[in-house]
Every structure is written in structure tokens, then in C-alpha cells.
Image (cartoon, rainbow, N blue to C red):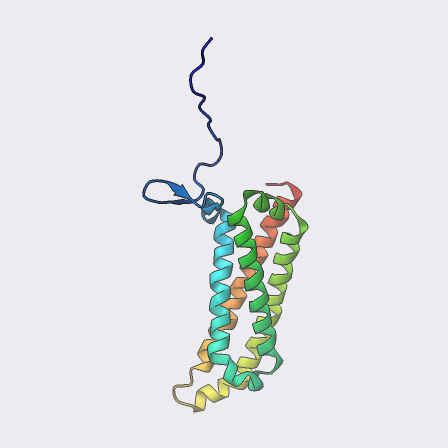
Length: 179
């Protein structure tokens, strides 16, 4: 009995990697994660976190002694949350297995809850310092851009805290198997 050539079919998502002109390369990357709810939330956390951190660094660094520890608290919160969210998203993109393992672990839930509480605390402290110390300077100094920029930073940070809280809730549901 003679047999023809064997056709091997690899089953999977089929959409991983990058399309080139004639082939698909970097198939280890799972870019469809960026279209999922988890990926969109992580992208929003990274983009808004970068926005908060850049506002704080570009406008608040010169007035860090005026703002005191509220500035350092906000900048530390923005930095560690941005870095951890980026690493989580990178892990999700590099491996579908890590997405399932990290989302179902307690780490993701605890990280999001601690990040939300950190943003709420540091933003309220920075908001108080901005209103107390920078608002009088804004009233008397023409073209004083630090007050509106730092106000935008702590308001955006508060929104980011709600996003982390929502992500914490969703990851808790995933952790408990409710989803």
C-alpha cells in the first residue's frame, strides 16, 4: 500500500505574528491580545500612566520642593504602575499561556488593587498640594503653566485609579472563575 505525502496542520489561533509580504513572521507574538478587554485596559493604563508621568516630570520637577512629598509620591506611583503594567502587557503579547496564568493568579488582582489605592492616595495628596501651593502662584503669575498641568496630572491619575480598580475587579472575577 502506497501512501501520499502527509499534510501536517497546526491548529491554533492562526493570527499570531506579523504579516510580511509573503509570510508571517514573529509568530511567537500574540497581537490579538491587544484587541481583547484585558489588552485594551492595559494599553489604557500604559498610555494614561505615561501621560501622567510626563506631565509630572516636564512641569512639576522644577517645583518639586514647593510640592514636597506629594510630588515624589505621585511620581513614584506613576512610575511603578507604568512599569508593571508594561511588563504585564509584554508578557501577555509574548505568551498566551502567561495571559491565562497571570490573570488567574492572585498577583494581578493584588497589583491592580494596590495600584488603584496608590493612585487615589497620591492624587488626592498632590491635588491638595497643587491647590494649596501652586494655585496662588497661578493667580498672580501670568502664563504660569505648572498649575493647569499638575491639575491635569492628578485628575488623570484619579481616572487611572478607577481604571486600575475596574481591572482589579475583572481580574478578581477571573481569579475566582466567575468569568
